[in-house]
Image 1 (cartoon, rainbow, N blue to C red):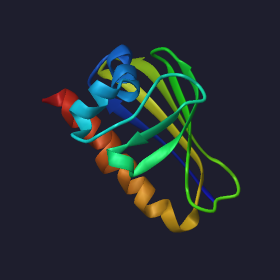
Image 2 (cartoon, rainbow, N blue to C red):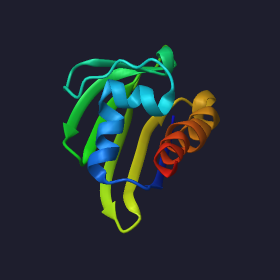
Image 3 (cartoon, rainbow, N blue to C red):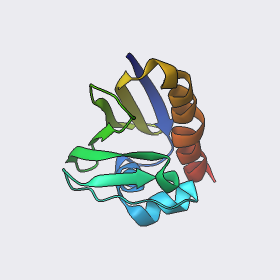
Length: 126
């Protein structure tokens, strides 16, 4: 199991970024794909038409999203924690992804950088 931590700058307020991470309609706008999401602890979610699935653990409005991501046959839960910090350029996003299966690590890191936060940054830059 591997861990990943990185900071991203998104040119939008923490309120806008939180909405983009937790509101189905907003998620569909920046991903261009089907999403199932409710900012309610204990609910399951699905992003990019089911490419990412899991369970919502905790939310702090405009500050934090914590989720368990599902990987087949994984013994320890894979936990994603996203913290939002105000920044003079918009929002500094602190990402921590724990317990990534070794065989999925490179794809997960590329997905965070290019698709997940890359697409979100591009959405707000346009």
